[in-house]
Length: 229
Image (tube, rainbow, N blue to C red; front, side, top):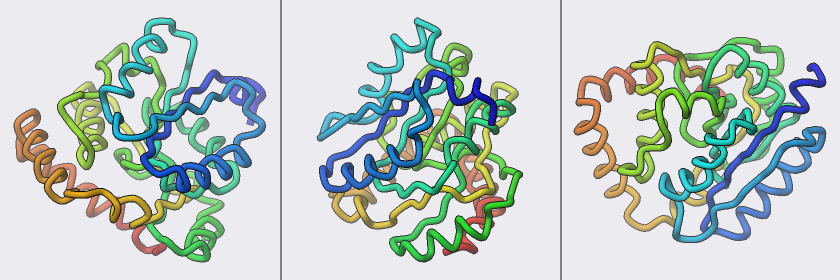
């Protein structure tokens, strides 16, 4: 990778209600990104999180036009080596990219997926929820995070908005992160109800056919990642 990519100004936000989970996240994140001198990790901690808090951070960043890359990540992630390098390379082509993922609470499953896809260079269509990574110029083109949503459809909203604006989002086929299923979800009260409410909000904004279109694409294309569980 060129020196220019290592020197890009990057801000990544991690959202967390759980100090122990966040500490594990930071340990791996910092160990795998130490070569990036202009990378800043910011935390949104506790109950005040979501689109409103993200936009408070993002508005001045977007206005100043200095930060080139902006990411929003869950706290329940494992990171493999060179995960950020892979994302930055693909952001040269796409305005929004998610790292390839496997959903597991077993470290050995994660490592097997990382090793098994280390030579993959392609992508599948659309981004995936636990880790959004954007060119900040995208926010000036199509707007910030939609504050009517909580979680569970924020990735679908971005995927559809990007598509409506004639662009493509993507998820790398090279698996470099593990989404630790159940680490935080089981601790979040009323998650199913939150998910149902946000689906209805998505229908109100984009229509039910848009939701089904995206879900069908996820079922088809993202089955690639399910094979590694």
